[in-house]
Amino acid sequence: MRITHRQLEAFIQFMETGTVTAAADRMLVTQPAMSKMLAGLEIDLNLALFQREKRRLIPTDKARLLYKEVRRLFASLADVERFADDLRSFRTGELRIITGSTLGLTLAADALAEFCKENPEVDVLMDMSSNVGPDMLATNVDIGFSVTQFQHPALKIEPLFHVSSVCVVHRDHPLAGRERLGPRDLEGEEFISFTRDTRMRHITDGVFEQHRVARKMRIEVFASAEANALVSRGVGVAIVEPLGVRQNFWPDVVAIPFDPPIEFTFSAFRPRDRIASPLANRFMEMLRLHIRRMDEGASHRPEWMEMRLPGRARPNDPDEA
Image 1: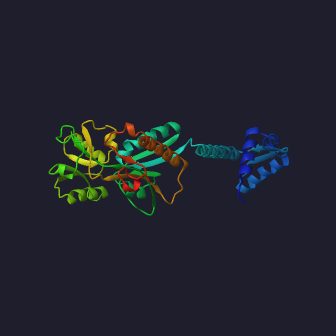
Image 2 (image 1 turned 120 degrees about the vertical axis):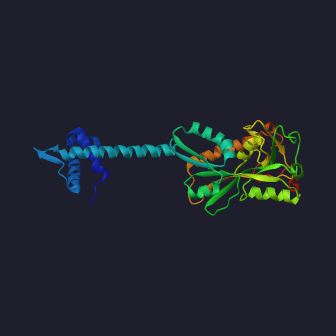
């Protein structure tokens, strides 16, 4: 027979009150029922916990040692109950995020700051990665964010918003004063490209090949943030998504709309085989709110930043009419 929670509770009450009668009163049971639980505990543990003298129970040294351990276990159980209550009310837990640098430094950071204020007891891990999709498959995270299109049956993908590309140049560059740029304007320029294995690299190269424009191609980067950093130092020009430039991290960088437009899609990745935690869902609510605010605040966005939400037609889309 296995010992029960009720037996251990009876043992604690007896050790703390010193008599069977007082322990029974605490547990709202009869004295015979209390005596039966204590005797049953001795039998189940095969330990002599009490000496019986003149119808009284006297705890043995083994009982006193056992009491310390049982008390510790009961305290741990109470901690579990409090932890579960905290989880129900979002007061504790863990949120693990992996993101590309652009979103991690902008909208995700804005939403995370709000999330941390609302959930001061929640542990948060935010990791930056240039390979969000593959890294999500290799690590235990709740949500991933990336502008890179990655498909895998183990991941659910939610497009968050679309933005059109911009060409970024140093403010002292001869092209910095132009209102729009096209492929031919970048003929012979030192061009900072995304790595060869990325979808955006293939699309960008295709545009220049279609227009038969040659660029100097010796610098590759994993993300827009690195491209902007190099442009700010006068290393070259690049075609990137506009979100990072909008935040004015690089004051020496000028963003200019690029035609034909190349669309970047920012997406959220979540594990398909795991039920989303309430904390992850709450963070996504906050992030979507920040995205909507950015979309609704079009009058405050730079003219060169074109943005649209999923399901919304492009401004110049003939199907929109």
